[in-house]
Amino acid sequence: MTTHYDAIIIGTGQSGPSLAGRLTREGRKVAIVERKRFGGTCVNNGCIPTKTLIASARAAHVARRAAEFGVVIGGPVRVDMKAVKARKDAVVRVSNEGVEESLRENPGVTVYVGHARFVGPKEVEVGPDRLTAEQIFINVGGRAEVPRIPGIEAVPYYTNSSIMAVDFLPEHLVILGGSYIGLEFGQMYRRFGSEVTIIQRNERVIPREDEDVSQAIREILEDEGVRILTDADVTRVEPRGERIAVAMAVGGETIEVIGSHLLVAAGRRPNTDDLGLDRAGVAVDERGYIKVDGALRTNVPGIFAMGDCNGRGAFTHTSYNDFEIVAANLFDDDPRRVEDRILTYGLFIDPPLGRAGMTEAEVRRRGIEALIAKMPMEDVGRAYERSETKGFIKILVDAKSKRLLGAALLGIEGDEIVQGLLDLMYAKAPYTVIQRAMHIHPTVYEMIPGMFEELRPLT
Image (cartoon, rainbow, N blue to C red; front, side, top):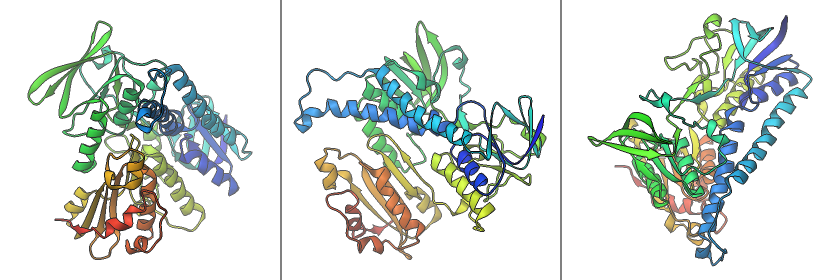
């Protein structure tokens, strides 16, 4: 049976349900297709569950430090992993079910559950159903990339998705990958009580960051007992009895790490390989990401791609912003584009990293005449009072316009504080605006105006 709609949305990640709501408010008849779990990566195995688990891990970490604050806890701190998972599942369930209910309760939306594949540029099949529309929005997200390591197929391993089912404490968790996912899970499971080894192929963890940021993050995790091996090229993975052996070349030598469990956190890939994009004529790049222009239009008129599958962002907030860009162009006579947004994100280790704009390395590469200021968190009263003095704040400013170029806040509340600087960047206002404002004491943000007094030329 073929049914015609004004619009079809494939996938219920961050941008899909929001767009469905906007389309129906504009009087459009909408079909939305979900293959498996409503809410996409963020709701089911990304932001919401991981930050819920991180909260449990932090509670255990703070409890172990209780004596530092004059708090007495009887006996050693113990983590009940079944209870940790149950709490995570309950939090996820609220969001997952909320997304599905909101879609099903919308009279302008018809929900299809199944795998959508293109039949042509205006037609999609979902099981026995054929759907047609003048506009189709692809929002299929991504999944873990499993590297081609000899022996990997012969051992059990987790990804960021499958590890959500774990309700026990791994004795020794070996993690392949030293970027966002690997670092967050590494610290989390160390705080739960596991021995943790992170293996990073690059010469430093989270290599997209400046070297001082990478080094500080490494020190934070190593201080908590996480073992980190960098510049390590894994050559083979194999079962060793009931354990897993990982062989690698490090500094010209071959070493081996034997763990009880393995987590693969070595990158992501888009869920575009089984959509029938070739039948619709939709172009993808060499990695499978759908090619889009600044308004998120593909090369086929009427077909758009939003979220992780378009390669223009890999975060929940970029996916939601994709929806905003599409809606603004379609309905608001507001020509918004992907190029207008300023890069920003967080790394949710503890303390977290909040990032906005350019790194110091990028400013140097571009040859921008810039000023820089840097303050260790141990000089911040709020951090000292809380005995959380790890990390630093770094700010880069255009020497001529006095506008912010970028910021890295590695420290308590860094993921929140950076957003005030981000707003200043969007306003295209000089940093002197912050200097003239009165801020609350004692906070972290109040220190930033003083940092501007310490700006020095970036040499």
